[in-house]
Length: 431
Image (cartoon, rainbow, N blue to C red; front, top):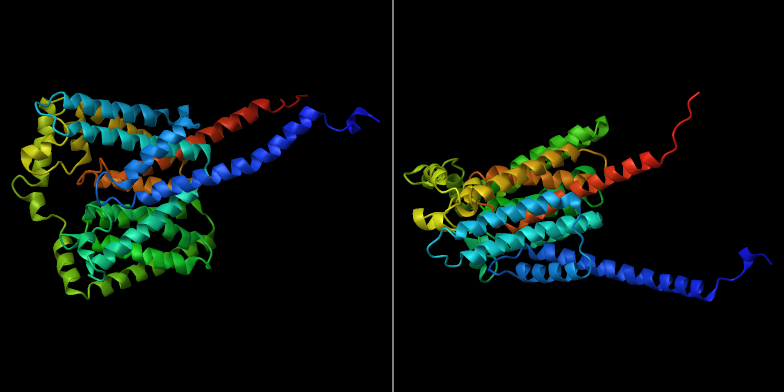
């Protein structure tokens, strides 16, 4: 009997047995990890009070994950370094204040949210299949919070007024201006599924999209309306750029027209209610009284940028609102006032770095390409509306940043693997 036919030795047999036992254990741990991530994303849709369950849960999740193997790779180093520097600017800004009040807690929340972006980027880089889970959990949270907003707006449930503010739907949020934008990425995801997915799932996606569209509309947030419209247009345009098939382009055109028709129908139905039509006619004006009046939003922007020239370290978190009666309503001015020039420069560099890398990789044929495309488009829209609204503590903004940087890291690893295969390939013979 040859040695090849001999039975495995005791230690080898034991090692194989341990390996067989370890496989289901790893599978179970993977399922548990996926559930925990999905629950965290789901909780981001319920922020009616602070601290919200999301903060408490994510703080525990990140802490546990860090203890049991969270890896932050060099591919997301720019995200980590620039967010940390941004918050250091906020800490320095606090030192300029005579009375700090609760501003240390404000910066602590900023730093925590930055950690959530790093966390999402790291776990996506480690396992790209989590992208689908994250998007689906976001859709579920968005549909539920949108239903609360819609039912509350029409007083269809007891105590529905707690889901509205100033006759505007806000779902399980504190502000309609955050509620509306939160619904946009799930809307894009469902629309993408309608355009590229199977007909079998189309009815469910269409119903979900109509719920979210109505939620965005009833938020009466001009920023959310603009974000929704621009994101939809950019997604269709990106699909037309990526897909060269005439049949596919025709499908996109037909489905887009159907989507527009459904959107118009939903708005027409909603406008039959007097409270909707009256508020819509008021909110549809591009410039409101509080925008253009003396010491209105736009004049405060001018005042704030002039103040930044005299206060390079900032004036302290939340101080601008106390001085002028309203907060900055501009993310760039917010960075200057609350985080100083150090924070402002790091934020600008981070945003530009994100888009340069993201748009560079956005149309490459990868398993994660659709998720990068959708997240990047919605993130670009958030950056645009940041000129008229403050996105500093929007939890889903940091989730978007984490998704985009997770996909950037995946692409960089992909390129690294390709270079490694090229070096290992045997040289071609000449002659």
